[in-house]
Amino acid sequence: MGVWQTAVAFSIGMLPVCCMSYGLLRARQCFMGFVRGETFSLGTVIHLRGFAAGLLVSSLTGLVAPPLMTVLLTWGAPEGQRSMAVALGAQHLLMLLFAGIVWQIAHVMSRAIEIADENAQIV
Image 1 (cartoon, rainbow, N blue to C red):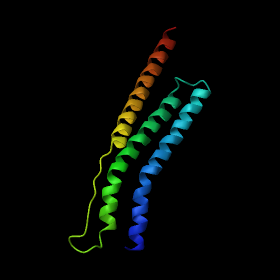
Image 2 (cartoon, rainbow, N blue to C red; image 1 turned 45 degrees about the vertical axis):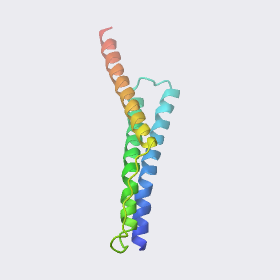
Image 3 (cartoon, one colour; image 1 turned 60 degrees about the vertical axis):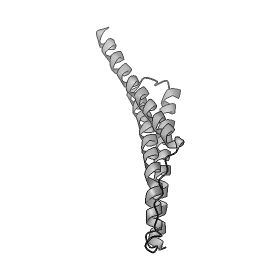
Image 4 (tube, rainbow, N blue to C red; image 1 turned 120 degrees about the horizontal axis):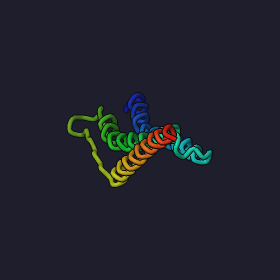
C-alpha cells in the first residue's frame, strides 16, 4: 500500500467527520441566536438549515466512504483478493431521518418569519 493510498483513504475517512463538525458549528451559531433572543430571525433559521445540511452530508458520506476506502486500500492486491464492503447501519438511517426533520423545522420557521413580516406590515 502506497503513501498516496493512505493519504487518500485518510481524506475519505475524514469527510463525514468534517461535515459533522460543520453541522455542529452551525448548530452552535443557531443556539447562540436563541440565547440572544433571535428565535425567529432569518439568521437563526439559516444556521439551523446549515446544521441539517451538515448532518445530511455527513450521513451520506458515511455511507459512501467505507466502500470507497476498501476499494482504494485493496487496489494493489492481486486479482481475486480485492474487496468492496458495503454497510448500511441504523445510525446512518436515523441521522438521515433526523436531518430531514431538522430541515423541515427550519422550513416551518422560515415560513413563520415570512408570515410575521407580512403581519408587521399590515399593522
